[in-house]
Length: 392
Ligand SMILES: Nc1ncnc2c1ncn2[C@@H]1O[C@H](COP(=O)(O)OP(=O)(O)OP(=O)(O)O)[C@@H](O)[C@H]1O
Ligand SMILES: [Mg+2]
Image (cartoon, rainbow, N blue to C red; front, side, top):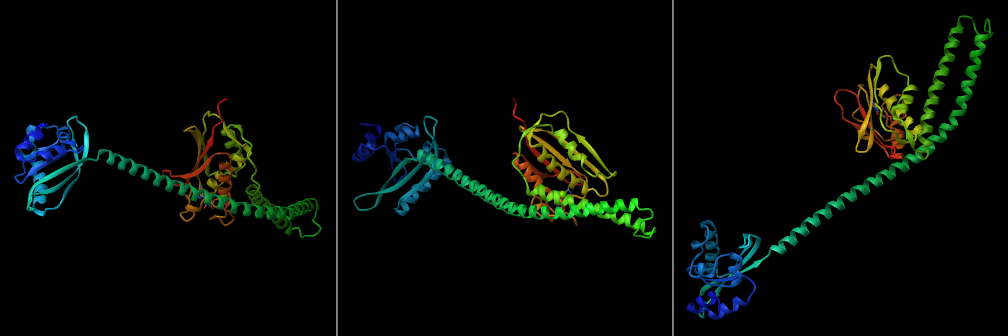
């Protein structure tokens, strides 16, 4: 017989004592004076107080006052209402120092005439249930986050697909038109050349007054310049339309930048700072990357009509080469910022709005990326990341 049961004997509760002793849940019985009259071994184990320290005592005899106040209020509620009262999610450190989460149900025990003589407390250890609940909550959260991420990735992929589809149709159309326009332009250029030669050779010119000769020469020069410009537009369109599969080879970024700079009409008011130290080679299609750099540099120069500085530098970050092209020009107009890499977005009277979209397509085609980044001071800065040549 346990100590609990022998004490219970004196209280006339021995049968109940034997019953609760057999049950795995920690249990206790209190009388109307809130004294423990019965406790089972499971309660002694979890509470850490021996049965003789509890029996015949109230919570105030062995618990901190605040805790005892709390239990007293709950016990009083059971006696007053005659209904079950639950203390949910109570955290307790057991006799072995383990943190446990308990849920205690207190139910009234009635005598023969129906009056409440005692209350019975049944404690459930819900530590594991809570742990499983927490695990479940964490996995559900993780799952929900994954679903959101995947949905976003899918939406992006969808956007990308739509964009590529539109670009491809636009590219084919533009390419076709450009090709057709190039032939008449060639003819105009030849005709202008013939006229120019005849004007130079004829002394005096057969078909113009001597005074008008300068005017004719000037007009022919204008034809030349405009044909040249129209040709540049066509080259841009064809570049855009005819993006081929890149052939990636180890390439020096320094020499590509130099070549892209070489082809530019650099006004004397624009100075160039080139900071390209000895860097490993990048795995890119040289022709395509040169084209992309050319477009970005051309934009930078076009943005510095009133002069400024074009800075090109590069370094290594996270296993990629980062090339920055920055200018001190007028900055990206706010209304094109969000559509910067879309085709036909331009703020220039003679722009096509294909420079950046072509650059981006070319760069992404070889596993790189281009972004507009914030910089201090005026102007714009584009950052291009490129894959390095794998070490041999
Ligand atoms: N460095 C820059 N500084 C300021 N604005 C820029 C810069 N680069 C691009 N932009 C803005 O982005 C727009 C789109 O540039 P993008 O190169 O695609 O087309 P574009 O230069 O207008 O025409 P093109 O097809 O001849 O290149 C430009 O019209 C300009 O408003
Ligand atoms: Mg441009």
